[in-house]
Length: 193
Figure 1 (cartoon, rainbow, N blue to C red):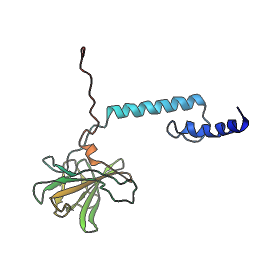
Figure 2: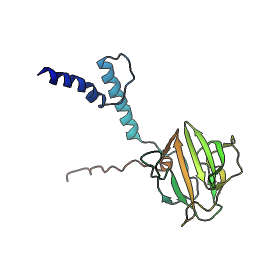
Figure 3: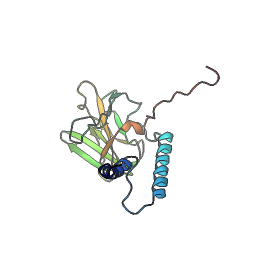
């Protein structure tokens, strides 16, 4: 190999190796440790994905409401999108229930809509709008406890409740907490074809 080609290969090698797996913390690590760590991390990630997150929350409206508009996050945080889901309900004044236990972290008006936010711990927060509530910041709520009633005004053509969930600063699909969103897998039938 000619020296310029060899030099270019050596300079590009770290970039191609680094993109093969998750970023590792900076420090002195032997090759066998990196390989073992990367394989262990991939295996645990694969196992977690295979197991799936079982839905553990309950619907904030009863009976189970139709989803009028789904989760459609924007590609960039400052762009438009739909950072939650719109749930249909039968009549104005429908009770809104906490999908999981938590603490009220916000109860007030945002722009022109009354909003209530519940901190469920672990970085997860649910927000509902437009909701009339008598609860105040700091009050504990149980799963299934009524936290307010739906007011009209969010969906122009139908009555709906907007439900958003944040994990830290990132909006996530609220439906993942009440539905099994894992993809269906077709298995082969036993016996000859």
